[in-house]
Structure formats: C-alpha cells, structure tokens
Image (cartoon, rainbow, N blue to C red; front, side, top):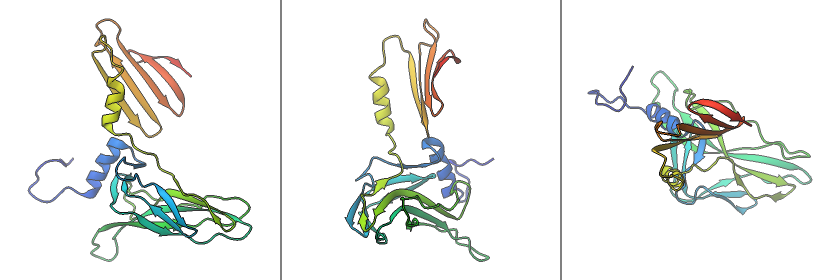
Length: 224
C-alpha cells in the first residue's frame, strides 16, 4: 500500500499513478475533452489531414495539442478502396540496463490494405494502463476511394464536462428529492434520485449495452 497524494519525503508520484486516477475518474478508454477545437480533423489536401487544437485522455494519459498539426497519408490506389487510422503512438524508454523511462507521444498512420472495400487496418495490442511500453491508439480514420481522399472522422467520443452533467440533473430536481447523483462510464450511465426514505425511497435508472433497467431501493423491478 502506498499513499499517492501525500508527502513521503522523497519523489514518489509517477505518471502511472496519475494515469490510473484519471482512468478511474473518466474511463479506461480514449476521449476528447471539450477544449480548443476538440481535435476536429479536416482534409488539407489528398495527402494531408490537419488535427485541430484540443485535449484528449488516452488510457489515463492527458495529451494536448496546442497548435493545429498536420499528418501525412499515402495516396489512394486507382480502382481500389482503403482505410487508414491516424493514431497516437505512445512509447516509454525501457532500453538498456538503465532505461530513462521517458514517455513520448507522436502521430502514427496505420495504413490499410487496398481492396474492393475499405477495411480497417489491424491495431497492435497494447495498453498504457497495463504498463506496455509501446502502444498505438487510433484517434481518427480516413478512407480512400480510388485516388479520392474522404473526409477524416474522429473515432473517440467527446467527454461531457462534469459541470454540464450537474446542470442537466439539477434542472430536473423536484422539491421531494433530497439528493441525486449521476455516474457515467464507458458504454453506460446511471442516474440515482432519493428522498432518503422519507416517503418514496431510492430510484435508479441504468443505461448500458444490455439495455435499460429500473431499480427501487437497490432491487431491479424492470429491464428491457
């Protein structure tokens, strides 16, 4: 056991510590924050995709783009289709007997195979949260139809700010509700309202990949 947010007398808080905390708070996947240009990709020319300013959380790591950045993609092939991924390529130096453990990120293009359909390229397995030193995470895609380059599309969702979530719940609060909470995770969310047992009890509505469920006093009474 280790206290992370506490004085230990020596440097002891690592990026892995902070990454786990962020992942625990917002999710273990990758998300666009609502800052700057929200990383909106646009096509400059047939071989250049421009990524707008903004911030993202990639498996617990906060990555910022403070100025628009251009990423080069290869030309399409006559009569064939292709899909490329523009990815964040994360590395941590673990080479040699005394590795620096320095972490870096850069853009990397995973090029698909030209064919009769635009098939997504394979992505190497790896997880920053699992401690892997070389991880590739797709951020947006771009398709090619012959020599024509399509408009790039973001692959990761926008993360809703907590202030907006609080506002959305507070606007629906009635005089009978003593407290309420909103919990969101990757692929689902839960809304809880309660009068602390004074009259109505506690109610929860859960939305996830399995459907919608309704709970009263922690017992599921309906599911679809």
